[in-house]
Image 1 (tube, rainbow, N blue to C red):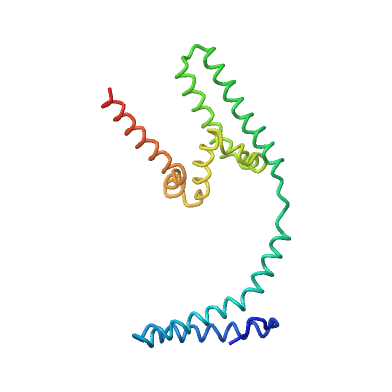
Image 2: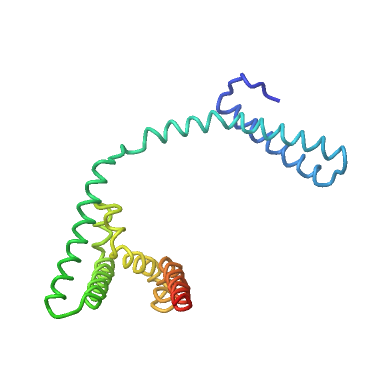
Length: 201
């Protein structure tokens, strides 16, 4: 066994790791076959070996964590917030312009809302297919996800990933991977709300 305050070089560490791994496998095998007090004794030995393995691996984990922290790019929270607000707000502004055009064209409020939502979903799907929406997402972050166009992007993106498998088994089968649960949940909830509303009258 290794004392807690002993520092090992890399070569010794690898040697002890291999040795402990072999001992761990042996004890696991014996423990599975043992019964009663013998099994308890072997379980204690196995736990001690696992503690030794963790003790040896700890310096490597700390070294990895310190290296990873250095390599993580600096977070730009304020910039991300501003871009999400500007891009998400711009998408909503475009939607409002379409809505105003539809109402001025003679559509009612419900029809204009449905037409606006349909057009935004179509545009989101179109720009995702052309590859522009992913570029926008890198700049806008959550600003491109929150509006209704983000819904279209989630559907088309999941389908395009499997385009190489064909239009039926690939695109068609994977089209609702992400949005499917949302549609099912929305449909079920709308049915339940409709039933409650119907029987409550």
